[in-house]
Image (cartoon, rainbow, N blue to C red; front, side, top):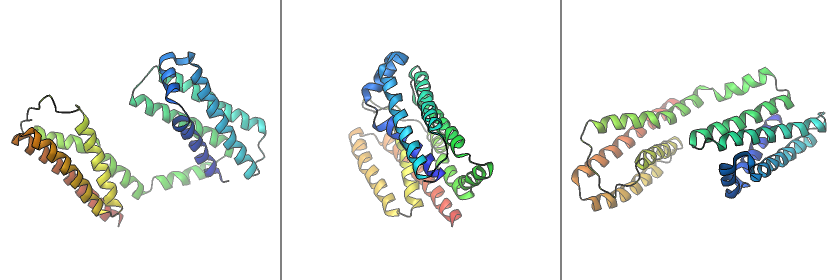
Length: 249
């Protein structure tokens, strides 16, 4: 079992404990009772057990010379830090704090992994070079551009024309924004893997749904407004996707 396998196994244990083995009732109890919730400590104990199992397996398969006490302490450190981070998160609901919560958990796991494996700076630099090669950076940049920047560009263009009035059945306030971003990410992914037929399927599916909405709306201005936004979103994605494919060769 390699050092990288250990890191991935620790992350896997975290994902299983946090998202698959944690009942919704535990999450709700922690959100309402915070540090007083017994579920918080059950959850931390689950993390401790899975982490210790991973470390023990790595110790056995890699013939590690580390002491059992060090492995036990490492699992305890990950579980205890997880408990403290979750307590802090329980006072700050919201998606941004969820992301921060997960980043902190990952940071603790990586630090423990570095301490146990005695990974050298040269090895870390080699891993960083793999993640920071031009092709990887180009892909990350392409996806990021299709999220908020593309939404800003589309919003700027649409704001140049009068926004049609919407009735009571206009739907969720930000649904269109999120649907547009997910659509662009999906279309870009299909372009990058060469599945242009899938792009056509996405366009056809969206057209059917839009046609149903617009037929009920019976508003030509709204029809043109939505059509313009859809074409802008798709056009930006196609241009960027084809450009990335050409650059990647």
